[in-house]
Amino acid sequence: MSAEESIKKQIEENSILLFMKGSPDAPQCGFSQRATQILMACGKEFSFVDVLTNPEIREKLPGISNWPTFPQLFIDGELVGGSDIMMDMYQNGEMQTMIDKLEKKRY
Image (cartoon, rainbow, N blue to C red; front, side):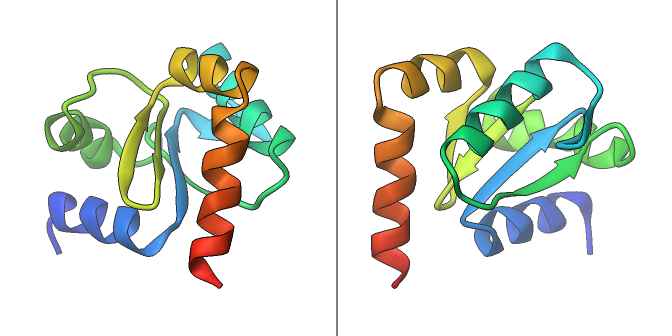
């Protein structure tokens, strides 16, 4: 499976997926740390991919998503954005609403 196929499969199979530097328990940059804190504050489980240990994904994902930086959050197969967009959405309630709608849609 190519890196592109792997990325698309991961996005498709995980309702909330964060491509980040490091892991939620040990983020490797401030932006990834903020992104995980936002998702944890929303109270739902999420999947993640450490782009530092997956250099091929780190290289290919920006071309697929049209987003040049990390972290990158995907909800229900759609790119939401990076940590700044996530913070804005969290502060105005959109992030929680988006995640809550996802839960209702899945069940």
